[in-house]
Image (tube, rainbow, N blue to C red; front, side, top):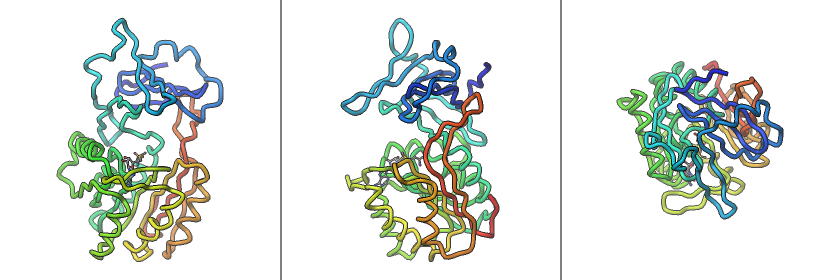
Length: 292
Ligand SMILES: C[S@@+](CC[C@H](N)C(=O)[O-])C[C@H]1O[C@@H](n2cnc3c(N)ncnc32)[C@H](O)[C@@H]1O
C-alpha cells in the first residue's frame, strides 16, 4: 500500500488500537471502540511509535530505534489537510492537534461560509487547534475562536499562520465557555452560525467545571439568545455516551425557530480499506438559505 506522507490517513484499526500515518510517521494510538480484529495485520509491524495510556491517567509515547526516543525533527511538523496546513505535535496526552473525524465537517463549514461570505461572524466553541475556525475563514466569514487553553489558542493561531489565513478577521479568546457566552449576551452580540464540540468534562480558563450532562442545555439556550433562535447553521458534534446523533438533533430542533434542514449522522474516519471507524455523533442544522 502506498501512503501519502504529507497528510493524515487512518490505515487500520483493531484490538482497541488504531494505526495512523501522520505525515512521515506511522503511529499506533488507543481506540476504545476498536473491539474487532485488525483488517491488515502485516501493516502494523513497522510502526514508528506507539502511545500507551496509563491506568493512573495520562500516558507516554514509545519510539522505535536504539535510543528509544523520537527523532529530533519530530517535535513538530506540517501536514496538508487541503486547503489547510496543520501543525502536528505528539503531545504527552496522546493528542496530535487534529481530530480527523471532523474532515467532512471542515469541508461543509467552508462551503456554507462561502455562501454567506461577508454576512457576519461565526462562534466556534471548544475550538481546540482551530481547523473549524480556519474553515470558516477560508470560506469568507469572520470567526470568534474560543478555548480555555492558552496553549491550544496559540496552536490554532500558528495553524492560521501556516495556512495563510493570519490576515482574516478572527477574535482569539481564552476563556470559559459559559462565562464568555453570558458576557456576549450582555453586550447584545449576534452571530450568524455556531460550531461546537463539547467535551464530556472540561475546565475553563480559571478552573470552571464544564459537565456536558449538566451544562449543555444552558449553553444551547445562551447560543440561541446570540442569534434570536435563528442561526444560519449549527455544527454540533459530541463524543459522550448517550449523546447520539438523534439526541443532538432533538437538542437543536427543540430550540431553532427558523426553517431549515438537519444532517444527522455518526461521525467516522475512513480507513485505507474504505471501512469506517466510528468516532462520535454529528448533527448539522443549515437554514434554507444555504446548501451543505
Ligand atoms: C476535545 S477538544 C474539542 C475538539 C475540537 N473541537 C476538534 O474537533 O478539533 C475540547 C476542547 O475544549 C476546551 N475546553 C474544555 N472545557 C472548556 C471550557 N469550560 N471552556 C472553554 N474551553 C474548554 C479544551 O481546552 C479543548 O481544547
